[in-house]
Image 1 (spheres, rainbow, N blue to C red):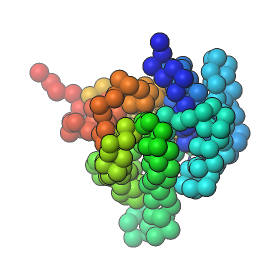
Image 2: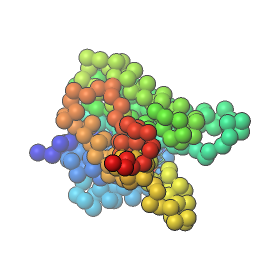
Image 3: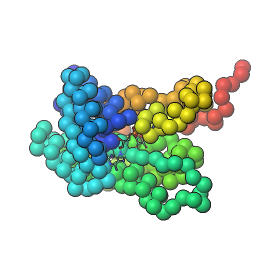
Image 4: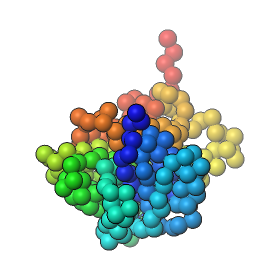
Length: 262
Ligand SMILES: NC(=O)c1ccc[n+]([C@@H]2O[C@H](COP(=O)([O-])OP(=O)(O)OC[C@H]3O[C@@H](n4cnc5c(N)ncnc54)[C@H](O)[C@@H]3O)[C@@H](O)[C@H]2O)c1
């Protein structure tokens, strides 16, 4: 029996990166998947990959921070497939590094909207549906940048720290309903979000330095994140609630001191 057999799962930001990898992994584990994003074309690419691998994947165009749009996605999954047990609030965004004095309120508001508000909408709407229908698993996508400074821009780090608190708050809000809320905290992983960084490293012959300071001495792969998200979605994580799981090759557990010489 596959771990997510017959579960119905919505993944926001499902047109690329960790969202696409998670759609493939969830489907491989037996879930019926819906990918949500702002543009149809990348969602269709994900859906085509899932279908080619024998899975079921719906696409739904909506902004993950828009309540009506996300309610529409949930209603459609329920209408077409009869329920919803998993919601991966994966959508998120970062911005370019600027000196503090040049940062703007609009930039900070954008970071909070794409990272915290999207997660709040997921918790509120998917959690309410699941609470009234036997429970489920909500997974938020935070970042190791929420734990330490300079894991992204200041606004991004602050917003992801908000996602961490929301994880714990929402776990309490849904106490007694069999709705679990947990977060993954990815470390540096090559995706659309970090492509410029990886491209720069390649162009400058420094690719082998990416992720080198982690105990695992490599960057993350989207499949690393999808695997932990699938675990949290499954009953293997049935007693996990309100938890923040770094998936970062160990960097958040260490000082970036490189290799010990014994
Ligand atoms: N790549 C990394 O190194 C890294 C590290 C830590 C955390 N993360 C987090 O992982 C998550 C997935 O990002 P990724 O790295 O796969 O990058 P990505 O750019 O490939 O994927 C992010 C997706 O989210 C979508 N998105 C952003 N805001 C949205 C909104 N308001 N509504 C709908 N869709 C929206 C984007 O269009 C994109 O498809 C993000 O929350 C990101 O902050 C990434």
